[in-house]
Length: 323
Image (cartoon, rainbow, N blue to C red; front, side, top):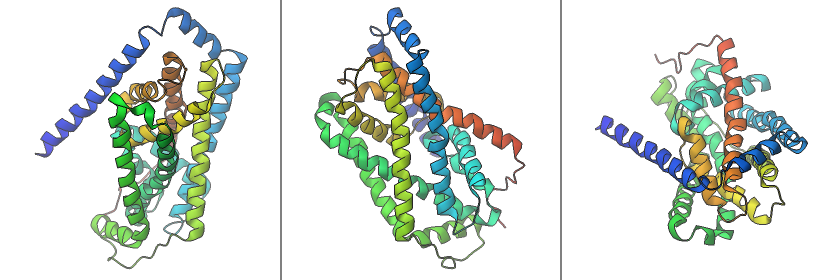
């Protein structure tokens, strides 16, 4: 039964990737002419292009540096680590996260920077920490979706409603996690680590810590949104109107909701961009190129750095240290 579910899940994910390729082909077959490719190439290597790319790359350490500080902050009650260790933990997680849909394997690399006895709790905090960023993305994205709902009428309306439903479910799970954080951490420790009984550890989200985590998540959201807007500005060859900024919020809402497979992530992201910005006036080739580049800049480049960190470290990969 489990094998059957795994096969069905794999088939569905492959179909999503295949559908994305078809959508990209149908949208780009008339737009991606040799003349358009020459224009995009000249824009990329122009002074304006160098400036935009330079800013995007400069924002990489800011983007993931904010995430590292959040990681250091949320794990401090379990185990205090310095910023450098938190930073290495985050970058290593980015690298290993490419191995599974939805970056589900990211925590496996992040937790090895902590003592074995603390890893069950750190694992739970990894997923709760991610929900802070999810909630900011969902709040901004759902607001934008309400403003732009007419764009999703017809064949794409299912995408808007599916994303909204998942967002509401995530909000519910997140609130439960905040209210029952002690129970969750102790339960995880009992089930995985088998070292401490339920109820012997206290963890509290103070108002100050919640403000810091939500505030840092908002700043980080503005950073990676700014990178995407810079690329759209570069390849659009014109001024960006307000609807484009709304589209960026909806784009991140949808791409955050859909579990990605690493080998198919680029075409899926490009396909979503083509749907979201369909009536924005931005060419399909510019949209596809911008969405793929933002993925390369924020995931692939940091993954290379994360891989170099993993190679240099001598970890104890006894993940949870069960007795």
